Length: 186
Image 1 (cartoon, rainbow, N blue to C red):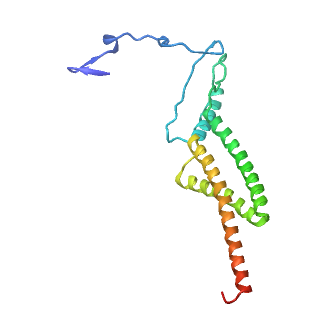
Image 2: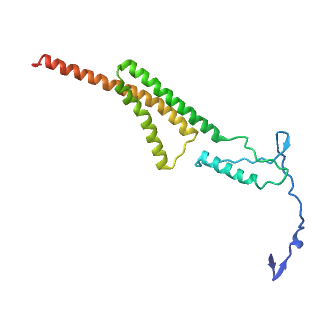
Image 3: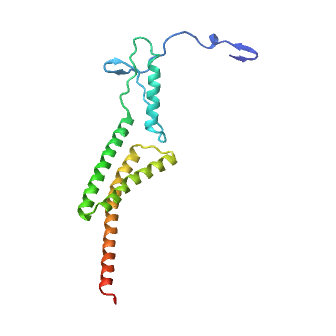
């Protein structure tokens, strides 16, 4: 309530108050039936998977309080599904890359020890990435998954090149040491 010159201004003096539904401003439908459509746009800094879980929890709570005759809420587009599927795909690629690296290294180097050393680099690097993400409060999203996929390719390449280089240097050192024993004056 407000006043003017000490006199109250009543709501009926400036407008009409009635009980009625809000004016319809649009129309929505889903599967041929009238529907209420809600779109949620996350902020760029939000964790997609955590936000999706929170929304799904809220929808679960809302199901219990729906009026009779109203269908339960349905999610038609879930961005977290893409991220979860990408994580699963990335795990498969990681296993495949590890097996491929093991076969190639064993084939070219002929021993098991350097193969195991190179294969240790892949999970250790992924584990360190997870620790850095956790420390800085980062989450996995589409961009970080793309970066991880590229990094795994580089990691596999570096593991092969690094182990091959160490093996070559050890071989050269062995040959030099062997030649020195055979010809001590040189």
